[in-house]
Every structure is written in C-alpha cells, then in structure tokens.
Amino acid sequence: MSIFEYAPAPESRAVVDIKESYGLFVNGEFTPGGGASFKTVNPATEEVLAEVAEADAADVDRAVKAARKAHDKVWGPMPGRERAKYLYRIARIIQERSRELAVLESIDNGKPIKESRDVDVPTVAAHFFYYAGWADKLEHSGYGSTPLGVAGQVIPWNFPLLMLAWKIAPALACGNTVVLKPAETTPLTALLFAEICQQADLPPGVVNILTGAGETGRAIVEHPGVDKVAFTGSTEVGKAIARAVASTDKRVTLELGGKAANIVFDDAPMDQAVEGIVNGIFFNQGHVCCAGSRLLVQESVAEEVLERLKRRMGTLRVGDPLDKNTDVGAINSAAQLARIRELSDIGEAEGAERWSAPCDLPSTGYWFAPTLFTGVSQAHRIAREEIFGPVLSMLTFRTPSEAVEKANNTPYGLSAGIWTEKGSRILEVAGQLRAGVVWANTFNKFDPTSPFGGYKESGYGREGGRHGLAAYLKGGQA
Ligand code: NAD
Image (tube, rainbow, N blue to C red; front, side, top):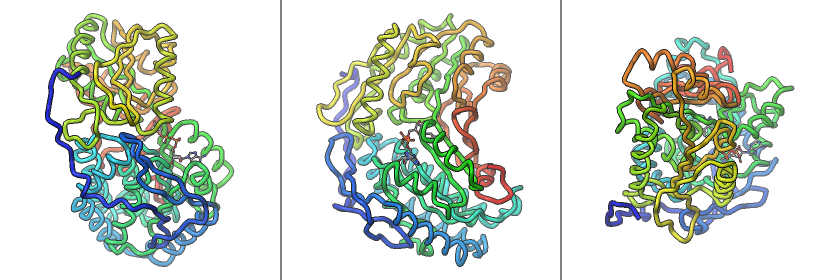
C-alpha cells in the first residue's frame, strides 16, 4: 500500500472507438489480409481488444509495390515544400486527436495515461513538426536531397506511436515512401495513424501499415523492392536482420537494446538524483531501451541513496494505466512478464538481494512491482542482460575512473546518466562513456532535434535531428 492515497481519476475510454477487427492499410485503403489474424489484448485487464490481420508475403508484396509506385510517381518528384504541407497537416491532426491517441496507446500498451498524454503523443507531434521543417531544406542537410526509395520499417511495442514517428517522419520528409510494421502486441495506434494519413489526404501508397508478427517483419526486410531497412527492437533480431541484408545493397539502421549506467557521484543533488534514478528505470515500466537499469553509486553516499530510493519507490502508484494518478502501469504482455520474472529469479539465485516496493497489484493483467537489487556484481546476469522491466540493479564505485570502467563494461552502448554538481566532472566522465546519449543531471529526455542511437550491440545509425536525415538520403552514411 502506498503511503499516499488518492481517489481514482480514470481517463474516459469513451474517446476511442476500437473496432472488432482491422485489416491492413495498403495504398491508402484498409484492405483484408490474405493471411491469418491475431488478437491484441489490453495488458491491464487481459481483455481482447480486437482481431487484427496478419500480413503474409503476398500482402507485403502488394504494399511494397504500392509504396514503389507512390515513390516514383508522386512523393519522390513532389517538391519538398509540398511534402512539408502534408507532414505539418499530420502533425496538427495528431495534436487535435491527442487525447484519443493517448487513451488508445495506454489501453493497447499498458503505459500510464500521464506518460502517453504528456510524453509520447506530444513528442510524436513534435517529430512530425520538426521533420516537416526539413522537407524543403534538404540541400542544407549535408546529405543531398535524393531519397532512397521504399523504406521497410519494423518497430517494437514499448513506444508504439513514438517509434512510428521516429521512423515515418524523417523518411517522408526526405521523399521516401514506407511500409511499416508495428509490433504484434501494440498494433492499434499505428492503425489509427493510418486513419490520420487518410484524413490528411496523404497520397495513396506513401504510408502502408502492415500488422503481423516476426514473419511479416522478415518478409518486409527481405523483400527485394525495399531499398532501406529501419529496425528498432531486440539485439537478437537486429543481428538476424543485419545478416539478412548483408548480401544486398539495402541501407540499414538498427536501434537495438541497452543496459544504461546511471552514475551518482557523492556531490550529486540528492533529491534530484533520486527522482532521476526513479524516472530512469520506472518510466514506462522500464520498457525503455535507454532505461537506467544499472545504478552506479559512489560508495560514500550509497547508504543514503539506498534509503531515499526505497522511500521514493514506496510512493509509486502501480495500477490502472488509465488512472491519471498511476506512475507504473501494466507489463506489456504475458511473455514479457515471464522474461522479467525469470531474470529477476536468476538475480536472486546468483546471490543479489531483492527488494520490491510494497504495493497491491491487480489480480488480473500483467504486473510487476518496482524492484531493486543490491549486492549486485558486474558478472551477475541482471547486471549484464537487458531486463526491459521495472527492475534496477545497484552497484557501487569509489573513483570516477572506476565508475567509467564499470559503466562501459557492457556489450551495449545506448545511453548513460551522470549526477554531479561539477560541470567539469560531467564533461570529463561523459567524454569517456561509450554511449550514444549521455544525460547529465537529468534522464530520459527526448527531443526531435537531438540525434539518438547506439554503439556496439545497441546498433548503428541515428534517429532524430539533422543526423536522422542521413538514414533516408542517398548522400547519408547509414
Ligand atoms: P523484438 O526484436 O522481438 O521485436 C521488434 C519488432 O521486430 C516487432 O515488430 C517484431 O514483430 C519484429 N520481428 C521479430 N522477429 C523479426 C524478424 N526475424 N525479422 C523482422 N522483424 C522481426 O523486440 P521487442 O521485444 O518487441 O522490443 C524490445 C526491444 O527493443 C528491446 O531490446 C529494446 O531495447 C529495443 N528497443 C530499442 C530502441 C532503440 O532506439 N535502440 C527503442 C525501443 C526498443
């Protein structure tokens, strides 16, 4: 039981209209798929929300051909300033329909409404606005202004709409057309986005949305008509994709897993640092590739941090994603919950000490209490493998160089956090961290103007900012 009690403040579900079944969005229209179908479930209640088409190889072929035609005849030749108008229109419709998008995202994904409403959806709109601004200025990008053609894009379930925006906005701004597959557990906001494309009068075939699972993703990646593959997801699937495209001339960007270090020095502003630790790992139930899942605390303040952290974790409200008071929502799927449980049990078996915030978890749905492991060593699997859930491992260090060494001791290199009062220390430590993004005295801040991406097994290529254009223009690197 949380020490604070609130009356429930549920957001209305009536603002969304979930259909019983959904087809595929190909060439500007919703069409039935030729393959099977699957169910999408509300992870907070286990209620089946809708039956969704599973695109097969023929559907993928249809979508790629529609995208090719749209690229060659309409979207590629269209002046950038005209393309920009469509992107601005999409951005504005996203803002107008933001409440509907946020509620649907929380229902299908399990994330708290305050996050989908205040973080996901505004950042999605910001992405479209930002790249709309580039569409008629590509000659100043440094990568030329020639699009690649058809982009095949595959995204995960943790930020369904935001990952869609990261993929579609820069691709379209540069004059590419897309075939995008959302994750199998979170297809609904991508299908609502397809409706938004219709509402914006986007020419048919510029955006095609194919729902399905791994096989559909594989068919998109391997289709010979796809010029560019953009993938966000696990390192394991990323490696398979890199192998699949290795013998082709397809361009590829991979945004994969992470195991970020969040480093707290003894001179850190304690209250802010504790908030940053909590935000770093419990935001979006820890289903965040750049989550600060490895907490490195300077030994002299370890006890104090631990005490404050436990106290703060005890105030997190876990429960109904649609309740505006909720801090931590549902785990996205039964399969993900099983993975989190398995790795946490391994952590205990390896000798780390487990502490979970005392909270009442609902009896249906997929839930995991915010959890902290202490007594963690670098060799423990919980310190090495991505858990992708609300589970934090705490380690200690004595000197800045030891902190850097421990932070870099990971196969991943996506992000890191530094908490200290000294600007000089921030610069010194950040320069030595092998991570694509380093936050100082903050964490999990996203902005469309800022490039995001990894080193090592976290992938290659950048999304966001001017750098994000490189992935979709002939003169770019990735
Ligand atoms: P996943 O790799 O299992 O699935 C991601 C997507 O790939 C899904 O749409 C899935 O259907 C599809 N897919 C599965 N097998 C495929 C194949 N053989 N070919 C093509 N597509 C295939 O990952 P997930 O569990 O959905 O997502 C969690 C992972 O995503 C975590 O590892 C997380 O770190 C990572 N992630 C990375 C970033 C980033 O920007 N680096 C952002 C969000 C999530």
